[in-house]
Length: 218
Length: 218
DNA sequence: TATTTAAATGAGTGATTACTCACTTTACTT
DNA sequence: AAGTAAAGTGAGTAATCACTCATTTAAATA
Image (cartoon, rainbow over all chains, first blue to last red; front, side, top):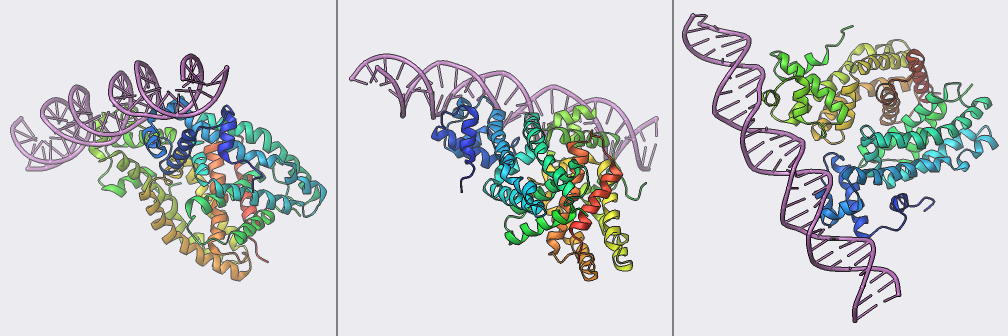
């Protein structure tokens, strides 16, 4: 289950690594809930404190500002969401086992991130909302995704193109299509219609089929 | 050019149809700008008034509350964005001209909504942000899209499936994949990276290719 | 032109906001 | 047990918020 640490560990290690106070954890938990429910700008520190069962001043003992609280939550989450994609077992088959490489590549990545999204739906919502307005989050996205994950994917895609299992589109376009499809699925599944009856396994397979044939070569 | 009225006309007709005061138009224009820049919750009526060159009280003469201002802008936009999809010339070829029907269907719809998004990028951003938190917008989406457009698309899809030009996935899944791909493209093109060098024609063709082959039958 | 109606104004209001700080309580060290 | 440092508190504060309303200005009507 715990291939990846849970996000409160990640948040902890991201700041001082000295461990979180119980009240601090309550604050984080309440903040995630309320940010996701009402949006960051509409959330008040007094409400967060109330739900956390904590005095309002306690929040500001641990986080200089409300924005600091937001970033302390969201930045580690973004890192957690993306860095597993760097693990080489995701791209191994691409180079070792054509022609099934592409399908294995997609399957592993998508199923893996699907579980992570399920466990962290509120955080996913907060990121998608706030990245539109917080320059610090945009910068973090660039440094983590564009500079780390993107190049790694490019190498895998170039290999797949040479094998003929992926069409000769620009890598930017291919990655955009994959991400649009996956994020669209995750958003629908966990944010827009989480209460619908979902056949997760089948829906995942269909999504993978869609990408594979949409980008299939030859 | 004007197959569709511009959105200020739509906003006007949506409320009283008696025409917009010059100052009222300035208010709407400023509100769209500021809502898109900072998000609805972080936008103040005083700033909107200042940018519109209008007294703050003037806003409340025309709109009872700040939320009323938001809805007066966004609701007509959502309608404008979706109702053209009901025009029957979008689905005509599906029934009249197989097997090119599917491609023509996609091409027309996507290119049409592409231009609309280009002309209304800030509004697109506001909708995508606020639909997550405003129940009134969610209700409007349901009544306009789910109850009108969705059934129409279902009929076209069923026909395409019978022709064998679309794979036998549930219609919900197919529509989700198409919308994810298109919205992902529009968001990347006009909101995330509008300053990049885009080969719009080619990128549109690639996007259509992706969907067509991803969902192709047989 | 006189009169009515609508549009626009901006100072004012109570509520809420993020944040501070002097102080108390708890935990750790010796 | 005494002493020190960290964690937690909550009343207080200045700023900002959405919104009101008595009054002025402009437009329409007669």
